[in-house]
Length: 443
Image 1 (cartoon, one colour):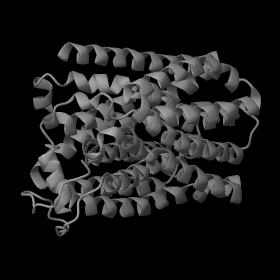
Image 2: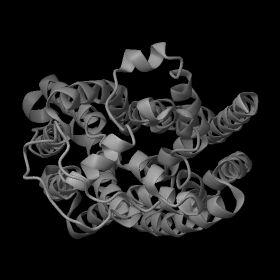
Image 3: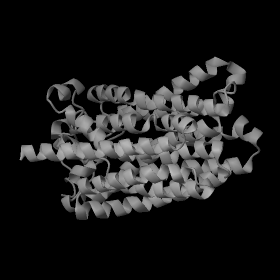
Image 4: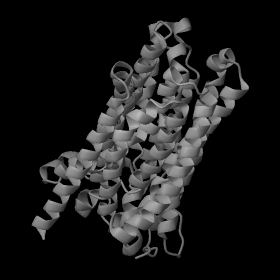
């Protein structure tokens, strides 16, 4: 199945854009493009904040703390968005049920862009004192609410409309937004940091990437609205029952357990996610010899490797099965967890290897982390279930990763990072085993 032909407007369609009429079928490639654009913009916003937690916020908002404690405080603020994200998802579902998809996306992405550019314009601690910190906390929570509310269900639509023999490939395409967003964010920071003095960077230079995020969000908003406002897409959502059902209705139906199972099945890749994107910059800045610019460019190279690894994961998933691929990658991440402490303690060369190998494993695992278990949901609850599974996976696996890894490794050594990764790998393997048992029981 490659799509459904246009069959007229859908009742309750979003009124913000005029309906788009066409006769040709919707292809999975078009849906995938929409997913990449949307996810890349969201990841860019979050990576800009994560990088700033290391390079900027300890000096601008927490100058009364040591550099280490300032980073830890910034990482605590960083985690708040992931705590707020499920709340944003719930609020977004209410808005969509009442007013439609397009108003929900418009509100969510306007909030995301406004919160991000608000951070760019926020005075530091020297000007506002603790009020500046509270504003930073509020704007970060707003980012989390916005990302939760921006769920448009395109990944689920892609999974259900892609040819059965290529579902792993199309699932991978949707995940490419993560490394693309990181490449753009890290490249901008590396360029600005290299061109300005430390004083210029901490005074005004760091604000530029946050302003760029607003422009990217505007482009992403219109790109996604052109999809969801199209009659053909709206008809596909309705036909496949990808609708914002009520959260408590899903829980009472007995399918709520699939949310936790889906989150745990992806935990290995989500635990690795911020340990190769955000954490290495903090660790190497504090305890390494490489310059900030050099670290960022190595990470950009790593993100490009992750893109290539994601492409490989699509081929592997279609050849060997998505669950088998995800399980094999969890095993490799578990093995990598034993090498991580030695690499992080191995000077610049070892730390660079940690980044590059970590990004390669991230691409292979994260490329297939969505949808492996969410397919367990019935069509009626898959739209909501997939959203909450992603929210919970981010909360359990990635939200606290930079904070926990930096705190434990600074007090007990890099072995703590290996332990964190190993726990995520074990959770993934256990969840995949439970899922297999449940499928066997159903059959």
